[in-house]
Picture 1 (tube, one colour):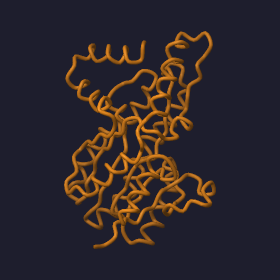
Picture 2: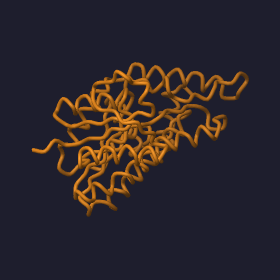
Picture 3: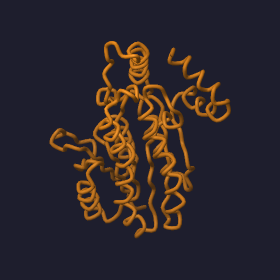
Length: 269
């Protein structure tokens, strides 16, 4: 059987690196991406390509290099993403736009870049890594939720638009996993004297605690592997703790205000 070729954005650390290592161990030819290849001179887990999902010229160059070398691309895992926290009123709008550029526009740029090759092959799989946070508007994480929710819904449309080409597409929404996302996240500062000072300060600490005590990202990698081996993937997958996944069920079944009250209680707001 021909070795499947996989491209993972944001593959140099965290969830992306876990996915890459697992798939390589399963016999896949794995390429990861990083914005700055020079930062990883000793990276040897799998091949790394320099690519910034916000820069279409770097995307075109990396995808072209991969296809020229391998002759095909079987799986794209849109994993690259950034976090953002803060009261929406006090979050600089340029930071909001940057987050959408990476978390929403970035995956779309990647999808557009690989679709011609997958269509030519008559086969391909695209897995968009979203977030359980994308199913609900979370206080002080509203912009992050919006970027991931937008990708979830856009994937639903793209699945229908590309299905006749033999291309499969799905969303995988993780909950909180122990990665370095908190260190790279944009935090709107807790401003002294701000009307949000107390509530945002407490919520920010809670968010960071959830990430640092999160599950092992290998669970996301294992889910990706199972999806790749599924003939007809579902529209949506979730991976996380029982309560994180259960929160989506509650969102769908409870009256809006009842669910809102649950969130307010959870964040002690």
